[in-house]
Length: 438
Image (cartoon, rainbow, N blue to C red; front, side, top):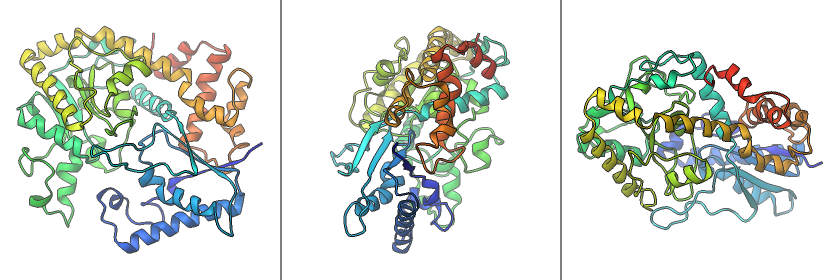
């Protein structure tokens, strides 16, 4: 049996013990000394794993943000060096992620895949998000929704605004989206948050607001923040499981996804919340994102209210412009809370179908299969117990309880395999867990 080592970014990434501050990773304030320290930490981490375990392969399993170069690049580079030379390591490198960073808008390859890496398409992190968001909904109530414990809570949405648009980490495409909403007099039609970009950065000692304000039209010093006691307003840590209290105020969601480059098709907690919350939504995402949702995720598009002709535009600016055109048109047709209710009611049955479709895909476990297949875990020929996280220790030297891959296998063991083997009614089990399903 082959034995593997997982690459754990928490052991070497910025923010960990002895590493440069995490904010430097995103705002490129590294100096040469920081970079040298970080490179040395990555090399030491790899060398220690090889010395301790001499694994048959290193596994990078990241179903989330696709930022392979930033998070794993130095580690991958050092593994490549260990594959040659006098102190040669004779293993393999397998990366499981939703995609590989691809062509940018100027046709420049952001991060070509090294020849010593085998890449596998893997969307397993969706299951972790699905479970986290469900758990939060089970234990919390939302204004503008009837008590969510009742089976038809989602049918009682009572919006008083056209849309919501929540933004955490600063990104150019998010800034542009917000700026265009302001330019077209649409900010007062919904709720837009961007605390990090409009409040936190301004408060940093070396921030020069006149030079660094990321918006062209939004007036300098504008603060975009929602209810004062919401998690994102009280800490810089992002609680991806939480739904904002204002979530039910908007009839539709403008989702600004985590990635927008070609081929970066990834369903984060942002789109996941719209699906679980029975909300119609439109996404600032990669080219063809809505087509991907329809063809690969079995999600019905909201063609009654949205024009998706922007979806294949190669330039994200043009895709955002297409979304703004949609919001502008809807804002002219729907102007009162009664109108917003009518807008939501026109598609709520489709939103319900999408909820169940999304749930069915998650519970099927299909997004775990690339990794399961690699490990030789076949749902047909393996028992339920073979998918227990304790058994996965037989394959992975350094699996840790509570990390993403551990949670993924636990989800598969508890919810996918039992219904696959016919040992319980999975619909009833999910209802018991979430209090959401009839």
